[in-house]
Amino acid sequence: MSGARLYDTIGATYTVTRRTEPRIAEQFWAALGDARTVLNVGAGTGSYEPSDRDVIAVEPSVVMRAQRPAGAAPCVAATAESLPFQDQSFDAAMAFSTIHHWHDPIAGLRELRRVARRVVVFAGDTGDPGRFWLTRDYLPEFADLQAGRPSLTELARAIGARMEPVLVPWDCADGFFEAYWRRPEAYLDENVRRGISVWASVGPDAERRAVHRLHADLASGRWAERNRDLLDLEAAELGLRLLVA
Image 1 (tube, rainbow, N blue to C red):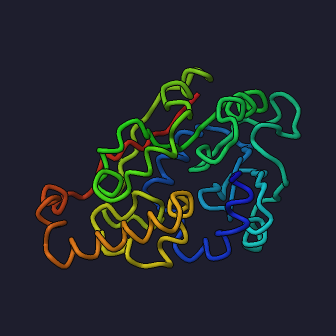
Image 2 (cartoon, one colour; image 1 turned 120 degrees about the vertical axis):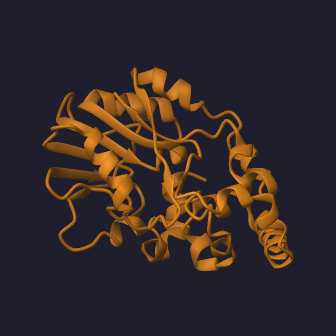
C-alpha cells in the first residue's frame, strides 16, 4: 500500500500521539543551517515544520492534509518522486519519518536534491532488526517490510549525504515506532499503535500476536529481565539518522 493510501486509511487519529519532540526538532532544525525557504516533503500534519522560516509543504494524503492546523504552511498535494517545483527553488528540502513510505526512495531523494540546495532527512537504519527489542522479540515480520528496499547507506550515497545519529529520549513526545523503547506498556494501547504505520503494515495477525506476547512478558517480568540495561538510560541509539546533503 502506498504511503498516501495507508495514511488515508490509518491517519485520522494521527495527531493524538504524533507530536513534535523538541530535542529532536532542535537537532533537525540546526541541520537546516541558515536556510530561509524550506520545502517539507511528506509533511503530514505539520510536525517539525520550523516556524521561523518560509515553508511550503507537500503531502499526498488527503486525510493528513485535512488535519494540518490553522496557520500551518501551505500544502501541495504531490509525491516525493515528482515534485512540482523548478530546480533549486528552495534553500532546503526536509523530510521527516516519511521516506520509508515512498515508492522509490532514491528517486524521491534525488528530487529533493533537484529542487533544493540543502537536503535534511530523518530516517531509520533498518538493517539490524535486533537493535530494537520490539522487532527482535515481538515483530519478526518487520524484517519482511524492508525486503528489497535500499539501505540507509545506499540512500545517503545517492545524494552524497552524511549521516548524523539521532538519539531517542526515554520520554519522547513524538510517538513514532521506536519512541516507547523504555515505556513498553505504551505498545499495548491501541491509540498508540494506530499512530504508527508499522502496525498496519505487518497486518492484524502479527499485531495481535505481538501485543499478546508483550502483555504476557510485562506481567511476568520477563521483559524487564531481558531489557534491564535500558531502564536507566536517558536516551537510546536505535539506528535513527539525519541524512544531510
